[in-house]
Amino acid sequence: MRALLEIAFPWKGRSLVALFGVWVAFTALCTNVALIAVTGRFIAAAAIGTTVSLPLSLGILGFALPVLRYLERLFAYDVSFRTLTEVRVWLFCRLAAGGAGGLGFRRAGTVLGRLVTDVEGLNTLYPRVLLPTAGAILLAPVVLLVIGRDSWIAASIVVVCFVLAGLVVLLAGFHAARATTDNTAHAIASLRIATGNALSGVREIKVSGAEGMMLALVQAQETRVFRTERDFAAQRALIRSVAFLAAQAALLTVLLIHGANVRQAIVAIFVTIAAFEAITVMPHAGMLAGHAVASVAGLVDAATTQSRVPDPPSPAILPKATALSFDHVRFRWSADHSLVFEDISLQVPSMGRVAVLGPSGAGKSTLAALALKVASPESGWIRLGGTDIANLRAADVYKKIAYLSHSTHLFGDTIRNNLRIARRDADDAAIWEALEAVRVAHLVRALPDGLDTWIDEHGTQIFGAQARRILLARTLLNVAPILILDEPCAGLDLAAQREFFDILGDILGNRSLLLVGQHLAGTERLDRVWRLQGGRLMSAAG
Image 1: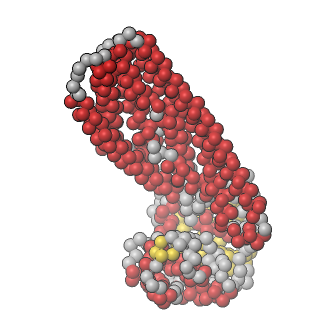
Image 2 (image 1 turned 90 degrees about the vertical axis):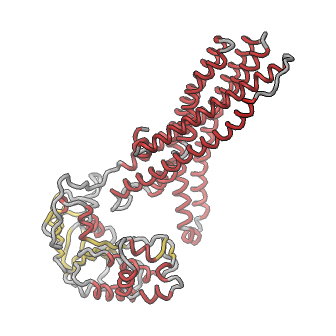
Image 3 (image 1 turned 90 degrees about the horizontal axis):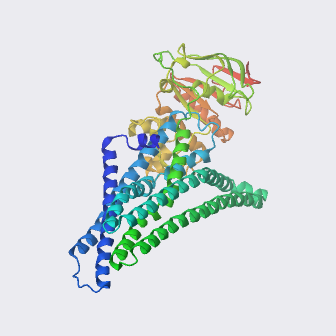
């Protein structure tokens, strides 16, 4: 919770708004109790035959209560929504800080659950947990004073029931939610993953006749979600029954003490009912608190996952030279994995063109990961302009290296914004120049909205070769002097691959190129071609 407060309330003004919301909520509760007390006195007077006029305070309180409730909701959800904004931005920035290599060994569904389910779990923390709890705590002495005007014994018993019931149901709800939140989150994430797999592979599933198997997997995860939610609902019902019984015990106490005095009994009953309305929300508040704490724990865990290669405490100055070299590099992804490289040495000189070919799984993409400081070698050195990149900040390395992989994304946005990812200050002239360089500008101009044409995240409005050219244009907007291409022609036919490399040869200029792939097609113009096999580099015809 301390971590959440540090994230969500970074400036004093926000905390003051939150405290003002607590004051408004407490005032609304007191107004409700006062309204009920005045009503009870009026009804009691009428019941014993006393002639009384309708109190003016009844109308004033009746008017003030909805206004205060409105202000309470206004401040509560203003603070809540601003909190969610702060948490989402904080979490995304923390994930992005170590995310150059993707999600690593984390499952996408789990991370998505953190970004969506866990963050949304904080939506009700302030309006439905903090406000009701603070209001109930502050209301206890008010109830003691109001009922104590007629009987301190009755007031003391009611307040004891009020406090004990509130604490019991709050803590019980909290622990019940803590115990089930993780199970529910994992169940929902598994259901999301199973459903996503079934939808994304529906074509293959249909052709293979595996609909029944995939449906069974989805239904199994759905049953798991229903089971956890059913068990939680049963616990919630049990805890709420405790709050109800506590309220009935307090009412019975009031009747027994004030049974002979109708006026005092009616007023005490009315005030007790009004007070215990604050207790009826405590089970739900406790459960939401437990869920929120579990969500915060998950968020902090996801956000504090450190990058594989932290920046050095005293980084070196980024060199002007642009040669990239791997010297006697030995590497494996983790201690329980086999070696990817045993002793790799590779030089990409300034303005050099080098290719590394090999079968899938040989470790070609790992070369790019090492060069981009996504991973670090067990031994050996990776030098940029003669400086070991271990001594450079990752952000400085990215200034020297532009990267295009076979899995690079076209995002659900306009063509203009997709290209500006590489350089946010790029104007339309620079964008058109990059599109002209990759020979796709005429196709974009032919689209009804030009650069403002919207494409989805998979680029389904654009053919594969065209999408690959747009991605290459994005890479060109990055003015880094070293270009790393990782399987840039994956999924393209031979003619499209040769055209891609023709374009590449025309646009490289003074840039260095490190190309990793599986095939020799298009590598005829390169300076050196290596073959990667068994964790070692061997010269190949090129």
